Image (cartoon, rainbow, N blue to C red):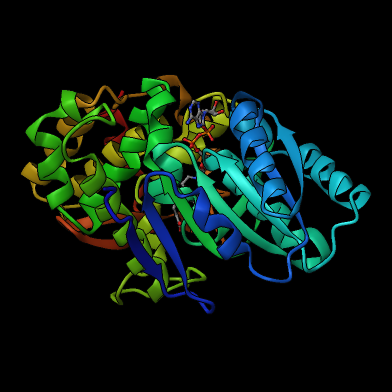
Length: 366
Ligand SMILES: NC(=O)c1ccc[n+]([C@@H]2O[C@H](COP(=O)([O-])OP(=O)(O)OC[C@H]3O[C@@H](n4cnc5c(N)ncnc54)[C@H](O)[C@@H]3O)[C@@H](O)[C@H]2O)c1
Ligand SMILES: O=C(O)C(=O)C[C@@H](O)[C@H](O)[C@H](O)COP(=O)(O)O
Ligand SMILES: [Zn+2]
C-alpha cells in the first residue's frame, strides 16, 4: 500500500495543486490536459537522465515530447539561455495549445516558467521541482525570471503553473549543500509565519539536514502552506502601505541583502546561503531599530548556523552591497524597503531606515 500524496491548493486565478509524495509522474498527463500535443521538458545538464526518462514517459502517453537541456544552477537564468529555449520551441513548431514541463531546481523552474510566460505570450507550464528549495518556494506562486549583470531576477513575469509535482525521492540525490540551501527558505517560513517549523528544525538540526529526517515531509508541507497562503492572498506582490498588513512582500524576508550578495558573488553562490546572511542582517536591523526582541533576533543566527548556513559576510563589501540593494524590487525611488519582524511571525516593512542603523546592523554580521 502506498501513502496518498498531500495536496496543497494555491488560490490563483486558475487554482492549482502542489502535490507532495512519491511516484507522481502518473499525474502529469492529467495536468497537461486534453488539447496538448507537444511538450518541452526543460532540465539542467545534471538531470539529463531524469529529463530523458520524463520525455520517454510522455512519448509513451502519446505526446510529442522534446527535451531542452539548459546549464546548471544560475548559469541557466540568462537572456542567452532564454533565447535558446525560444529557438528550440520555434523549430519544433510549438503552438499555444502546447506545454512546458520544468524538471530541476529553482533556477530551472524560474527559467522554464519565464519561457512559458513569454512563448506566444504564454503557454501552459507544469513544474516538477527536484530540490528542496524548488519544492518549498520557487515552483510555487508564479514568479519566474532571469538575472542580469545589474541584479538578481531583474527581468521576469508572474506566470502561474497548471500544477506542481514534488516527488520526495528526487531529494535523495541532491548534494547536501543544496539541501541545506533549501532549508534557509524553510527557516524563513518559520520566522515570517509558522514558528512550528523552527521548533521542528531546532529539535535536531543535524538530522534536519538530511531528507531522511523524520519531520522532512511536515517541514516541506508547512513551508508550501505558508507560500500558498501568502501568494493566494496577494498574487502580484502589491506594495505594502505604511502600517498596513504585509502581503507577498513578506516572502522577501532576508532577500534585500541576500540578492545583493548573490550579485556581488556574480551568481556563484547558492541562493539559500545568501538569504541566510540576509535574514541575520534584517534581524539585527530590526533589533537596532528597537523593533525586535533580543531572543528572536538571536534565534536567527543560532538556527541558521546550526544548519551549517553562513551568517556573516565580508566587511569590505558594504559599499557594493548598498549599490546592489538600490535595484531591489521593493525599493521605491531612493527609498530602500526591508522586510523585518516586529515579533516572531509578525513581518512588516521598514521603510528608508537611517543609514546609521544599516551600518550598525551590517557591523553585527561581519
Ligand atoms: N520563483 C520563486 O518564487 C523563487 C523562490 C525561491 C528561489 N528562487 C530561485 O531559485 C533559485 C535557486 O534554486 P535551487 O536552490 O533549487 O538551485 P538550483 O536550481 O541551482 O539547483 C541546485 C543544483 O542542484 C542540481 N540538482 C537539482 N536537482 C537535483 C537532484 N534531485 N539531484 C541532484 N542534483 C540536483 C542542479 O542541477 C544545481 O546544480 C535561485 O535562482 C532563486 O532566485 C525563486
Ligand atoms: O515568491 C516570492 O514572492 C518570494 O519573494 C520568494 C523568494 O524566496 C524568491 O527568492 C523570489 O524569487 C524573490 O523574488 P524577487 O521578486 O525579490 O526577485
Ligand atoms: Zn528566495
